[in-house]
Structures are given as C-alpha cells and as structure tokens.
Length: 330
Image 1 (cartoon, rainbow, N blue to C red):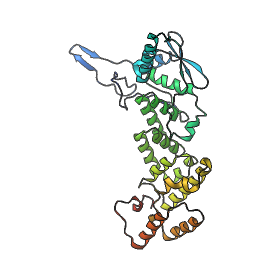
Image 2: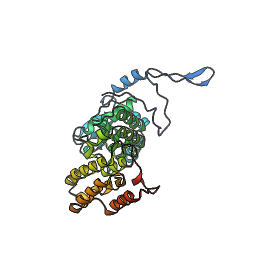
Image 3: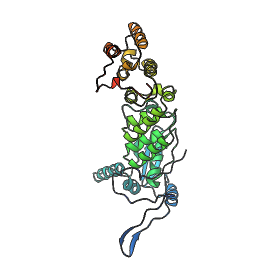
Image 4: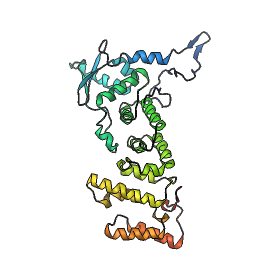
C-alpha cells in the first residue's frame, strides 16, 4: 500500500540538490575545495517533519479550494514554487495581477487536478473513488517530502496529477509502483493509463507482463474496458502467447461489449482492432467459419479474408506484412 520514493529515477525539469537516498547507499560528498564538502542528513527524518506542515494553517500563505467538495487546503508558496514550475508560474501570474490592483491573498480555485486526456481510462474519467482533495494532498506530500503514499486504488489518479503539475519524479514513483504491483487484474488499467498519458516506459513494462500472461489478461474482467487504441497496441506484439483463434474470439467479445456501451455498430466498434488480427495464421476451417459469420454480420473486411485464403493456397508471405508474422502462441 505504501511507497516511499525519491525522484532519482526521473529526469528533472530543473536542477535540484541531490536528495539523501534513505536506506540506499549514500552518495559520496560533493567536495568544492580541500576543506569544504556537501554532506547529507537523514532524508526520512526530514520527510516526516515536512509532512507535519502539509495543509497546516499556521504560517501558510496560500489557500487552495479543490474539487467538487471545495474544501480549503493550506500551503506555502515558497515550497511549492521551489519544487514545481507550474506553481511558480501560477504565483508569478498572481503577483502580476496584484500589481494591477487585484488581491494576491485570495484562495486559488482548482476545479480538477487531473489532465483531461481524451483517451484517459474510462474508470478514471469517472474517478468515483478518489476525490480531488486526496489527489491534491498526494501532490503536496511529494512536493514537501519527496515521497508519496500510494495504493492501487489511487495510483493512476496520482500519476495523472503528477503529469498535470509537471512532477516527473512523482510520475516515475507512480510508474514504478504500478509495475512493481502488476497483476492480471491491474494490467489492463495500467497499460490503458500508460497509453492515455504517454508514459512510454510504463507502457512497455506493462506490455512485457501482458505478453507473459496473455491468456489470463485477455480473459480478465477489466479487459473489455480498454480503449480500441490500447487493444490495437497490444495486438501489434509478436510475443502474445495465445493462438490467433483466441485473439479473434477476444476481439469479438470486446467489440460486443463496447458496441453496447458506445451505441455504435459492431462493425464500427471492431474496425480499429480487426485490422491487427492476423487472419493468415488461422486454419482453413476457422476461415470458413469467419466467412459464414460474415454473411450474417460482416465485421471482418473481405480484403483481409482474401489475403488469408491466398496464403492458404500459396504459403507465400510478404516480408513486410505483420499479418503473416507468427506470434509466440501460434
């Protein structure tokens, strides 16, 4: 449930002092001269003491009103500006407005702390179990302490908030937590979030897990919730460990569920995905069944079926066509 991490695994947007690594080996001191060196105290003790002033009204000089509940959250400008470019710019704008006669001590209203990715995970667009206050406090915890408390039910939302505020270190902590705790039940939401928020390394690590547990992930309860883009990306892999007949079956099941949800036709729903099903890898009996099913509901393009039959007859495959490349489970 808990994760204590620093931003050492991410590329920082600004030069920052090297933090103490806690239980990790301490880096050698940076010596400026023969009689002067930089030394580091206990990072854990520092984090615990800094955590005590999060949302503490005493000495606070900025108040935020966050999310639908509009609860007030107190903070300190200098800490936020030192650690986060987004807050630095926000306060600079506020200061500029103050020079023109507007007050700079009024609460700042933050209606949402998550990015509005158009292909964000369906369940995260709802965010029924995580309110804006929790997410904003998680962001503040990282800014103040260089650590963050994470759990499976909130980590994707915290990742989204980290991206919104340009906190690469927090995003890296979330990505590491997600991959360290990947299971068959969480893999779909994880890769969906990685693709939605353009987290390439997280996406690739999720793909490795899916390739190793393909059948289990394909039949997990959350698989039908992934987007067409995410499904298509998964089907680009040559390392999926299921036969192509299973790929086709899962694609049809996914399309059936999503057609009902979106109100689209089955043909339109499956269109972005069916292009990545490798029909030439199927046997003749399966191709005959596809043709028979297509007479009732033409969801598989005729050109793909013709390509598969041609391969059955000639056994000649173009070198640059992924449809003919066997998968690990073929």
